[in-house]
Image (tube, rainbow, N blue to C red; front, side, top):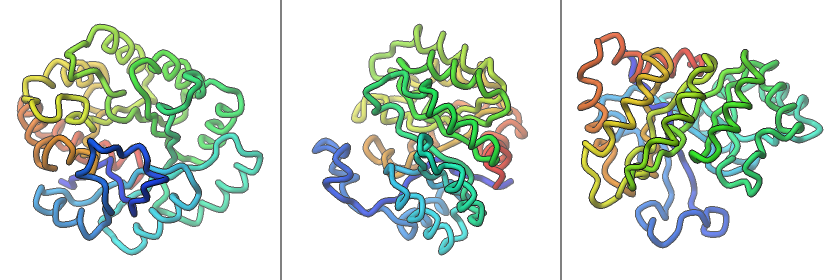
Length: 276
């Protein structure tokens, strides 16, 4: 059984570029590189990872690809590309030489226009990803879920994965609206879901395992065993606990699943989705 962490980040901390890391986040106001992650993966029984963009530049994509070239445990990269650019086709053709580049992501959650993903130029970019065989990671808040459902419905042959379960309001234990919208999204069979970033949506200092059960029930039931995957969201997860903390939450929950379903969750689905 190959275990894959399908969602983590690397960066050389830059206070201007990384201004989303505020004063409450001192634990991650520093560099995070493969040499720091590898022993953590090994201690927690993970065999590899997928590195996800955290900065919206072409340089970020190359930074991650260079790291993947140097460190074999980085099995795949989800980079950034300007999906609305006139030269997108040329860019995607250039990227074909990088086998570790599996897909792309845009930080939709930070766009002032909540319907940014429905803009014609953006959708034209998604169509290009589909032609070139790249995946797309959807990074959104619950309020964006109806738009995401419209987006994925327009591209039934494109592989999408929603990051962090679309960040449900675990801290306040609200669930009704998020549940209805995530279940609508899950009806589209081309969409997977990352069980990642859980701890940081809860109360960082006071969360308990029971806080997550209802939310996990929703996504496991909605997406099924074939369309869910584990991601740590390291190093962001360190804001609310150790790497092992999120694993403890999930091991407690998935104990009721079959051995095959557990293997799919902890690696099999990520391997097939990202073609690792």
